[in-house]
Length: 110
Length: 116
Image 1 (tube, helix red, strand yellow):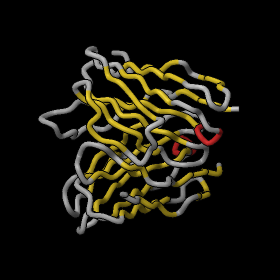
Image 2 (image 1 turned 30 degrees about the horizontal axis):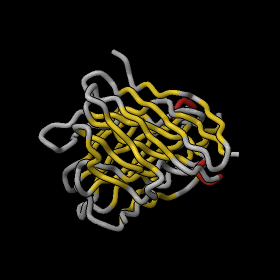
Image 3 (image 1 turned 60 degrees about the vertical axis):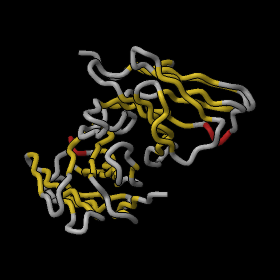
Image 4 (image 1 turned 90 degrees about the vertical axis):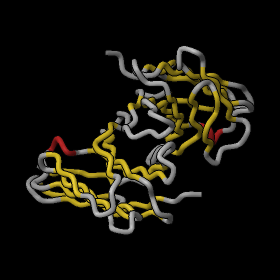
């Protein structure tokens, strides 16, 4: 079945530092989504990428889809304590069901 | 505008029993997907329902079954519960346009199932 891996599994950063999580798929994806899950909460949709090489920005967050559509990254500039949570990528090769990655847990130290 | 509603929020069952979890999708959404999330893991896709039929299925045994009703609400049934079925069960809804979903999922808060 489809495998979506993320690295790193955990990341601790000082507030104000940057953070990046990487997502790699074993198969070519049609699209990829990113979600954030706060401790004790449920995943919340952040963004969807569809085009090869696509880059999208949301304030301090930058999302990128690889040229081969098999990898993606999320970069947060100048982290804040509100960024704490686990970030998941979710890939699909049909556009209908999405397989979630293993997640990267971000801790921001004030 | 109501989001995704799941019930119950918590449930404790004995090994071998059966359980039914319920989900009401966000208003305007017609597609429901179910995920199992073990502690510290990413959500694992169970199956997806659209037009009252199971459209896609992940790598889960037949003990896991579901249903979608005409009002788009859905149920997840798990038979012969195992200790390993203990997890957070998440329902996610989305609109579906022409058979291709180009929108993010809206997740419910989940049902925490504990099997003892």
